[in-house]
Length: 410
Image: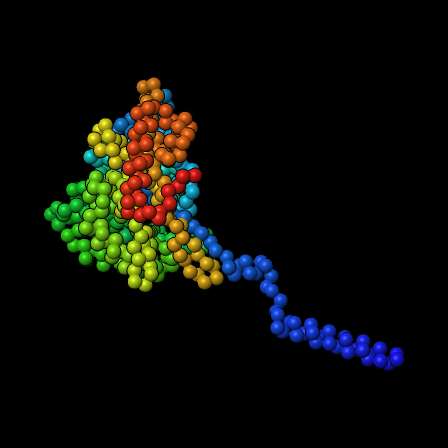
């Protein structure tokens, strides 16, 4: 009897060992939670663009402090800076120059702005500044070089112009493990005596290559040049390519044939985002797709972010309106695949009001301001009505072309 019990116990132990062995073969142990998480890790970045940063004479006069004898533009952006800082990279078009006080500050038609606007742009949360547009030569070649110097001194990254042929006029910036390439181009005005011009101002021939421009009259040739730039950026590791472009027709609310043609070609070259400026009004936002599925988000014109182009001066309400466009991408660190997640926008409006004898200019997130008027200094009855008109115009115009884009209302 004792022998029988002993045999049964031995058989039970043997079967248990084999059972454990079989379970290990058929059902491997689950990977450690941290290993699984690392393999499936998704990173996300948001790139934001705004339109024209313009400084007319009334604006820098409003920014002057007679006691300190200095110009301070920071209040222009105080009420919107939190929304600029939502982005990992924020980009703006600087449609003025920093030519220096000795030249005399000026507004339209040739802009020369106090250097402290660069401080305000840094304060607002911008990272990258396009310096190529039809006003780049407003203070001459010296002013172009000085503008680059002032921006770099403030830690801002200029694109579109450069100091020497050895420098790059574009950047590739790594954010959250994603390489973002950003380049900027502007249309040229008709040539003079064989010289390229911006706003009718000739670019000295020895400096032509320092400006990233294209000419509508030789667009096919210049598109080839642009394509080579984009290919070079890809070779240097860019996973997302942002193309900032000064184009289109002023005050026209829809894109023209050149914009449409260029957008299609840029999509075929592999550009991911197009941020447009120059029309001074908001134009449609759309996403186009190649046959292979590559998508390009196009904001044809982001409007004016800050300017004095107002209804009371131009009899045009739309020049007061702007938008911040946010484009969000995700990258799977395991596969290396980067995909478009979402496009969103924030309507903005320039609130201009008087405090005692001084005018104040403030960019406000207009939807949020109408919900909390006192917090955004939106207390004048006329301003409130104009802000409502601006919001309705912007939202209805964006929805007419793209119902899927999300308006930021938080």
